[in-house]
Amino acid sequence: MRRIMSSISMSLRNKRGMEMVQVAILVAIAVAVGIIFKGSIVDFVNRIFNALDAANF
Image (cartoon, rainbow, N blue to C red; front, top):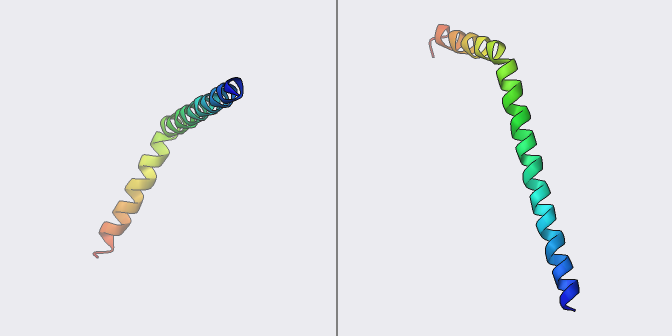
């Protein structure tokens, strides 16, 4: 019985570790995309704010 509980516990720890690796990979991809498209993103945001400023809300 103790061996079964130990293997279940080990299996759960491995899954948590894999989830952390997946999260780290997704964050790294998001940062890379942000760096690659930084100029486009900044231009887009500036155009939006300029349009809002010109609308005189």
